[in-house]
Image (cartoon, rainbow, N blue to C red; front, side, top):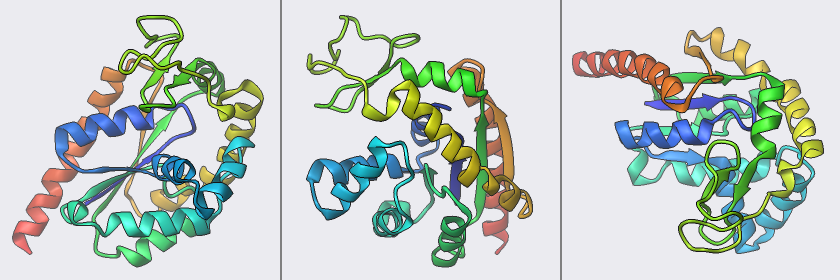
Length: 223
């Protein structure tokens, strides 16, 4: 089974993905994490990705596909996997369908207003040492400016400034939202109101996934 999480930057895909992974056991694959890891390694792919990420632009398909293809065919993904941040456009969606044609698919789209997204992302802080994520509005560190886990100084990512956030949202609406119609045509699309509390959004996610997993298990058992 392949679970795809859609939603603009700041919609909570990462948080919901972690909760899904914990409850259902599907490994979460975040293209953002894959890209940031490449950036940390400082290889050619990482350097190319860094330039686009800092400007709020989407990283090229060539870079994303190379990283993702290697990941989804690893042993822990045989039962199923969860994609956070991929696909980002129609060509990527079709590529995924071509290389993993046998996967049963469900698409969850977490939807919020632009203003909510700007407010959320502007308050986000990251620990560059251990990767812990904070939000000054809803999940601030115990000590201002310091990571709870490793005591390193937390900071704001360059792509979380208001100006860059607005550009990222514009890119999302222009390039990624067309996926809604693509997945609706395949009858695998489900939209979720992301404006509420984390636990409320997750309850809606679970309601959908429980039905889809049960349906998938019945189908594979019969087959």
